[in-house]
Image (cartoon, rainbow, N blue to C red; front, side):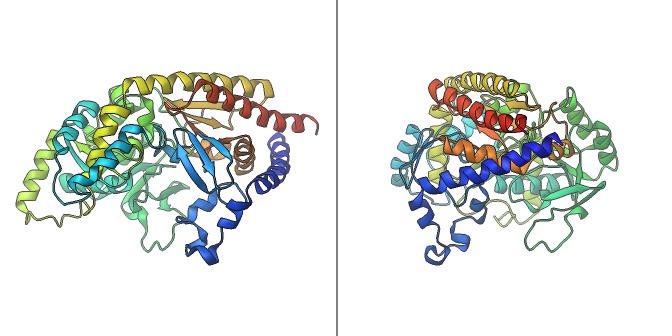
Length: 457
């Protein structure tokens, strides 16, 4: 009943805040016109309508952590393109690289003079000895999965329930009543993805051992901390068990660091000493430019060389795209790795994340709400649960689309943009202490409104 009362007040808050949003954004409203825009649903990507706003916010300018919409409203961005702009919008070294990249040709299907430097930086920063590039993390995951299947001679993939690894068909599954099925909201899905993909609960060592026992899984693909179904931290000892069990089964371990790169320099893998066979990173790795990287151990690299020799040797391997590995990507990667993704940047991120985490927890306690704050480095998530969730089933049970929408819309009207689809706050090195404190104040104000209305019921 308590959740029902809170959601009732959230619905009233959404209605009131939607009117505020509309009144402040007549130009944004006018810009959202499917008939004149030429875009399906009036937006470049249809999911841009999934924000809890009456119509999309239309961005006119973006710099650091500040957005300015068409109506001149200024917003502090703690969504940051859901990690794509983790180091801020338009970091100066990346903008400089973009300005100068054209002199080498934006794309030539050949390595540029930045290639050797970038390769060495990737090895030094993330540990694995051999690397390749893609355009997005979705691409990189596809390529890494293909390599895992080629190297092991196995077809099956294992993922954890509630996962999201981009637009990779094999991973778009749900665990329902113990069975892996294609995710229900997929468009145009024509085969049962459960034929070759196995989904099990995160943090379930027994389920993992059972799934690997048949020795037919090519690789386990996982985030080190699940971030797309709430924020689900690994249980103590789970990563040790995951690595031990995959090795015993001859299964490769593929870690997707696209979101957990917020942990610290080198990502969660480097900070916590994990030992993957393959690793993927996208989004912020090039400062917001479309580029991803995927790395492999020397053993996989050696085996891949043998497979390539046994086959025709030309590029029709199903791995790589024409615009991947371009001079533009390499220039931005180098700029980001050398000058943006630094120890100093991470120190600033962690310091403000400390402030925000403490402030959020204090505000939740003051409002008398049974919520928790989960965190991985500079990435924080407000979870509507009294205790940290251990798997996707618990995360789904704790979630409330209604409360989330009220929180997001109210925070936006107070000048702070949260990440859609969940309650994620990402702390950029460009965020100031004043802005961090302002975020906490806005959060406290919003949940205070919810708590006051609940108490008055």
